[in-house]
Length: 456
Image 1 (cartoon, rainbow, N blue to C red):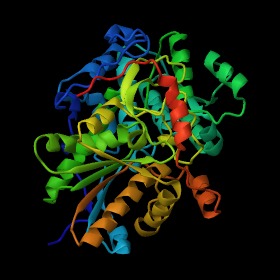
Image 2 (cartoon, helix red, strand yellow; image 1 turned 90 degrees about the vertical axis):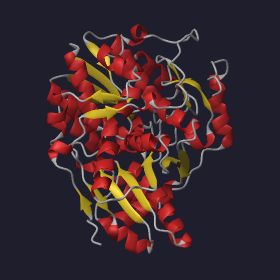
Image 3 (cartoon, helix red, strand yellow; image 1 turned 90 degrees about the horizontal axis):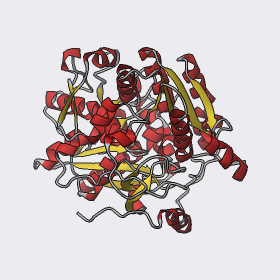
């Protein structure tokens, strides 16, 4: 039987609704808490987010309609193709069929654009004129810069310092789309000045950049903050990926045995996996694996606790797998995966036993990325390489067991702006790094005294 290498959908087949997994969890997600330990209400979030996005954040409605104006922009690159990685399969001599959802086709080159367009739209509709945000490796910063430009908003992005220095072209992308991009920590904010005085050589962290962006937001007129991952509404917007993939597999009468995405803040993994978890909740057998770096092992080694999303503790406390908000990650090249916490919805899915997690070493990921580039052609982002390395492990297991399996990867972005990391790999300058237990415990000590999520 002929099986196509590329599966496409027509424009009219693009999903018209996002899927909200909160409607189907066996147990409710623990609510965000204030510093007093009491649940926060929508009004508590209003200085930071527009109310229309807050409504999505707290919604338990299963299907959320996608506005037509958002769809009109998304159809510039969506539906994204589902492609079979035949070259990689041959190189691995595996009986597994490996498919990838190519999210690198968006204008900004990653899946982040799916929620950037939506968030910019909802902020504009609420009357907001300016957005502030953070970015790690720059994929999110590039995406929100584009989203703001298309929706007529001003944008300022605080980019984690080590990535600002390693990846200057991301800053140029943001500038091209009209955004201001500055390194974080930055002397323009109070928290930035404090951290620079204490640690002048700090590489920065997403937790610091979030604090700076929120501080800027709450002290500026007609401004709100936006986040590229972690939050419920961000994961919601990304489910368009998995919903499309389900339709594409239906077209070729296949269904994935294993769904894999890299996991930084969690939205990319949520986007590909949550629609399939709906099937799993309803009795279908499917494994979902979140591939995270061994340098930032949230789901594989860190506990499920209440923690703040930023170093200055300006956000509500969220129930999630966390290393601790004071964590300063090592300067690994997968900058988008260096966050200290994991999305509450992804963390809760782990708690419910719906997903698995696997920690990947940096050198294994680059080795997998190079093999991918030499067999499939596309050069993956270092973050995407974590999902590829995990998929290769599963494909090798299928070969050893002599089993035919269907593996789906969320190919979350290209690596054309990350070539300095590849050069460091080829030059032998990269090393494997697993977070030492003493560092993990030292970081977790900052959570002493905070509330603990109730048992299931």
